[in-house]
View 1: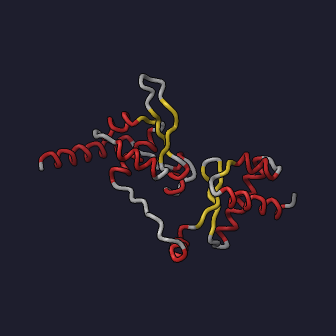
View 2: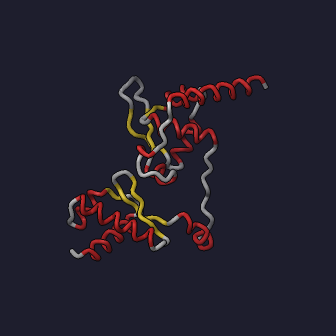
Length: 189
């Protein structure tokens, strides 16, 4: 298969699937090894970037997805009805942060860290496809474990969890003190 034909096949696969496709699946489809396929995908990603196209290929862990550039949103709005913009409140961001850094994590662990019930926040994050069920804990009651999704990676512009900022221990202590002060201020009102 010639190079242009491989690129065309990859475009067709990513466009048609509409979701992230594992590197192994793409490699198998175009009859290449993983290293060649990864190099081909990175070349294509660079071409889309250089030519400032309306679409791009994103790398999400060990998978790839074709999607619209966020800079093209205003043009899409003119054609489609305005998509519902998901709003991440402080509560949702706090809950999502806990899941991102502690995953897989149970709702009870989230609530222990936050100090309040988290049913609504967890349900909203699942609805927004930012977290998902990642199995069950082997413990009494077999509680559900939650983890982040590819949508989380896409929304926050990272290709893997390793790219998340590292929180130093002293920062964690500062966050705890701030949270405790905030709770105390609310109690004093």
